[in-house]
Amino acid sequence: MSSGTDLIVTTDWSLSPSRALDFKTCALLYRFRVIDKLPEPPSLDAARGTIVHGILEKLFDLPAADRTVARASALAEPEWRELLESDPELAAMVDEGHAECADGSAGLVALLESTRQLLASYFTLEDPTRLEPAEREVLVEATLPSGVRLKGFVDRLDRSPAGDLRVVDYKTGKSPHESFEGKALFQLRFYALTLWRSTGVLPRLLRLYYLRNREVIDYSPDEPDLEGLERQLEALAVAIGKARESGDWRHKPSKLCDWCSFHALCPEFGGTPPPLPADDTSADTIAQLPVQPADVTTSI
Image (cartoon, rainbow, N blue to C red; front, top):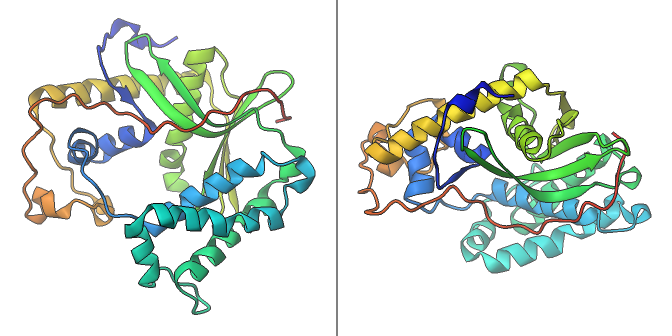
């Protein structure tokens, strides 16, 4: 068990893997997203990821024999049209031709092509006709002995007849260099810790599917590994708590600044952060997604 039981961290907010990584990357980035809740411009890459995840979730609603590349590809256009109808800013980006393919196609045509390529890549990595996931897009939550609350959504949980768990996550980008695999696996290790602390079952395998270049990363966690992660998250929660109390959210320049949406408000780029909200009642919450019942099993 964690040695962190000596540490008591009282929080009225929960920590997700994405927000934990935000704070590790830059405390000011965490503040902008969680405390200030500042809007960020839409991203076609992020939207495509959302579409692919949604289609892969719906794929397992079909009878096993119908889980084909053709059926998955057929879902791409209605999913994109529904999303664009609900997001005028994203639709404007598509109309302006921000999405392009190597063959010269642009706009929605390009998005559909790239989405279908990613879906086709998935079918080269595993055969969905041979799987019955236990749960999909499932909310997992746990409170550590120290009082730190963890929360996240898992793309897919597979459970063997013996009760072994496999945690699966789909990524629409390229697999990272070996030196960055640890950061890539942080999210799945976070989920593994949350499942272990909430159910008592230590997941046997964590699996990342990288669809763009058709790579798979597997990792088998053990108790010392997850106990070490638990201590890291407890220390992170303490640091976040101190920043909330003091209002000291320091920026941390790095190469990741190139992808930040908040240059205009960051001191590193000559900007000034807005005043802190008078009453910080924010919580690191996650949008509620439908939770599927765990009524089937699959081999691992």
